[in-house]
Length: 411
Image (cartoon, rainbow, N blue to C red; front, side, top):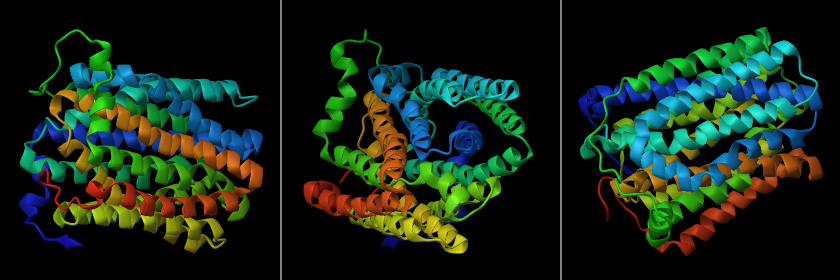
């Protein structure tokens, strides 16, 4: 890996731009709140049913809106990104309040939670492409890679603190957890609203079938973008184990809600360390090979986590999972933004979100279903082996992706 240290001024270059600071803070708050909701919902549903299949349903009901609305969310993001981010954050806050009210009334089953999570998925379907397309217009090109690194650090920092906070808050009461999440999402909406409208190339013509499918067409024609997006889809789809963490916390490692929060936070600990390091030591060369190598390592650590029955080892391995994933996420997201024209960035990011959602939420459904059929440990181990195979196969199928060297220019 080729990396050079940068000066403190270069390390924090993106934060010199005030709109980006507001954007970064809003994303942190939204992600933090989402993590609180995820921990609370996971524990609450597993308490109700004790069925890992229901944990898989949590993922699928949040993914389907991204899939069904992909032709709409991208076009809307290209035209009204900042406004859509604000409205989506408000809807997410409303969903957290709905979960609060359902909990206060008492739950006899998981169906009402699934309905609210579907609405939450709709909000996320719009929020993701809008936020991804907006960031490219908040900093100049020379600071873009730095902004991507700090974007990842915001997400990862929230995934460290958020689950622990969610576990502790849920230990006090589910109501406190959901109320805290709602307040943070409302604060995020206010911050996004204060961002000045950026100068951005947006489509002004009337939407047609051609413009609606522009994101798909561009991704298919640009093999580096196609390879980067699909690599994440299949690797995480096969190896994702986050949906099964409540099973590990309760039944395998015998921990309580705080333990679930700790397990969910562990990947973020490794990831934030890598994200901060990357902000000061950006990858200068061999980016494609580095990304593929770390995807393979992600699968290997997934296998090790699957067979672990020691709390300290499980936490350490999850931290390494987050560290290896951060390298691939950083490279992939930079490549996608760098190789995508501004006028179709929202639509490309909408498709990317479907792929990310498929890898995460559908991956959770895959894990929950396999765990119900063959057991939790085999489901995780087989998934990790699958991710290793995907890394090798993509190195063969997408030679242009493997040969990408730099992240500061198209090459």
